[in-house]
Amino acid sequence: MVLKAERYSELSQLTNVANTASHEASRKRKRRKAKGKCVILNLNDNTSSIQDLPTQMDTFITKSLSEKLIIGSIQILIDYSYLNGIQIMKTHVATSAKKLLILDVNGLLADIVSPPPKDLKSDKNISRRAIFKRPFLDDFLRFCFQRFDVAIWSSRTRKVLDPVVDYLLGDLKKKLLFLWDLSHCTNSSARSLENRHKLIVFKEVKKIWEKIEFYDESNTLLLDDSPYKALLNPKHTGVFPLSYTYKDTNDNSLGPNGDLRVYLEGVGTTENVKTYVEQHPFGQNAIDKRSPRWAFYSKVLKDVS
Image 1 (spheres, rainbow, N blue to C red):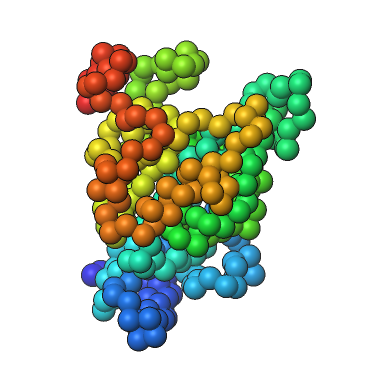
Image 2: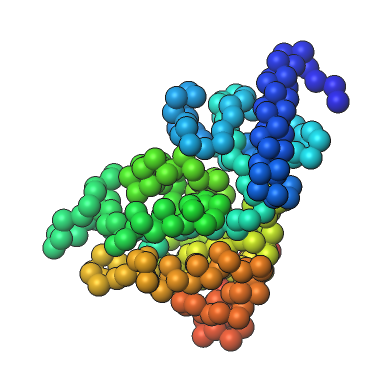
């Protein structure tokens, strides 16, 4: 492989990272008898120094390159989700023991209300939006990070999403595999039936699988309260809980015995996520030809294709 001279030092740094990761993976394989490691270079745009990274994580620092490298048994994958020039990146070591859990934000982790309601004080106001944290959220997030590789994918803009996630996750944000916003969604020209001011967009999980080949339909689960956002995905790769609203004061879905928490416990231990979802329906139905609104969504899909 021929590289420009000015990028040689960057490749050297990445090689050092790979060697360190290879040694670490080998050590853990011997200790835990685990198979194959996949080292994913994942940019955390709020990370500016080594001191900002959590010490309890297996992390390494390097600058970004445009190559995908395979050194020994270690595959180096670079996530350019938020790449803007040469920035510091962090690595996340994913193991085959964990599935990928992709979380939505509004309606799942919190209720984001604009304009803020006058009848109740919110937990936080951000950019003229009232943020109501869902009950048991903090404990639920710890549960998720213990059992899954966790990512967030929201159809909000980056400007809105970042401060909201900062507030909801705190230091756990640094453990996200990735944080995707509206720019990663597939657009359409149709407007939502629920909100005529909102364009319909889709979250295509194949975009993730193309970037990180380690994941596929057998170990990936998308959680979203809007079933139509998964219309372009393979069946049974998503689950659609009922939307949370701040008025639902008795909500306990995220709690230790809550329906969503219990469901995810099953997902975390199953061998095949797609099969589990097919055999254990949960929440809202997926949209298909049997759905009452299929005529509308079929036209939307034709527009996208």
